[in-house]
Image (cartoon, rainbow over all chains, first blue to last red):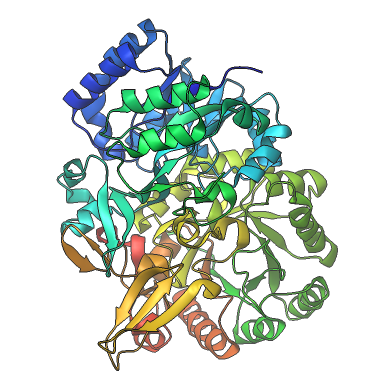
Length: 298
Length: 335
């Protein structure tokens, strides 16, 4: 049985360049993860701010022995956005594809099929595997039973399960951060930087429900998937993805590492994670085929 | 001299055989429909076609010079792909003019099994760049792409310059605010994925509840989606058209309860190189289908005649959700 790895997913939020530099320096030095995804996946308007951040982060993480994967935009549209996606697809480093725009330029060379791709079954995964997909992070709404079926039919693909963080639920042509501030996408003033874990969206009765991050809508709830390594292996899962938030991600990774190493049980891991300032109420219902906001026994 | 473009093709919805006949009689060039199971994105009780009804409908439409497209446009459930491939088989067997699909698995099957079967890429695939569209064209021979409702008219014009396939644009009816096929809001609240089951904001998860102040709450999966004062017409709690609180304010965070009406943009869509315009609403009744199709038929004929479109706005307003309408992403200010 191969050891289950840990990955730090791409950060969805508009953090400052300084925050990113400090964050990835600490991840490189301290976090018990094998792989780190870098890059802007939500908003093409933000991309220019961070072009200076990534080379240093890549170097530092690589030196620390981490596999670095460059993530691509989930909804490229404008010319410059398409060019960046095309350039990433054509270069040699490992990339995560989050929109099929990247596939023709990439085809035949290794890539990660990201959670924004609509891969719901064994045949569509096989289609991508034949074109270079080595790893697959399933759409967050896919139940574990479907993931198991797709994984069993594609043994050459490493399945990376979205295990921690607010769930990426939707993208749009419209920027809701801008709209909530009375602005439009073109004149957004980058107000999304005010909410480094997403802007809380409550129902009219005050129930926490969703979170807005620019053109992206996430869950308010925080996905917590805690399963022992043997159970994950049995389901065909080879890696867990932890999605960056402002709480201490080194500590989060430490709890998951202890779980995978058998130091703590799944239940104890959940309890330890719950003691942390999670961005939202714990949830995992999707994996059981239930509403995503629910928390169920897996 | 501006290039004379071909008359716009009018693509209309049909949820029942009777609606299909109505659409054809009202002037639809093409009617799209789905089988009565989870393979299509309007999988509501009492709606859609059996395989026999589909065959009869295709014969009827062809007899009147209209085309029929079969939407097999949800994503196949793992371990049950045969349900979706059987729908493709049915389209081929009855002589449907094209299959509208989004899933790589469904497209792959159709392209390999029936190389002569025409394929349209569903809006659910949300292909909005020349590169993504190029992938579907080169890999599966897709002939037409239904454009996601995230593009402005200017962007559609540029896209049409850069692709070698026909494009089809929605002009009327329900409006996804999120990128189509990339939205899990409804499943987060209810557990039912529109991508997999073909139902968004499913009716069996909707509850209306009266508060002590005589207000009406509309809930979906336990979450309050909208609230109506006494005497106010209560709308359906479609998740993305609900009222929520964010940034200290309550309101329609994602979109007001509006529907799309791009009738006024027909000349510009034609100028942008769009081949076909599409009306949403397979869940709608015959009377609605007849009225909307007739109005758009007239507009397209006027456009082909003197190059001007009739102003249909008033006539169609009565048919839009709560009488409120938008041109959506077609105008850049919507974003």
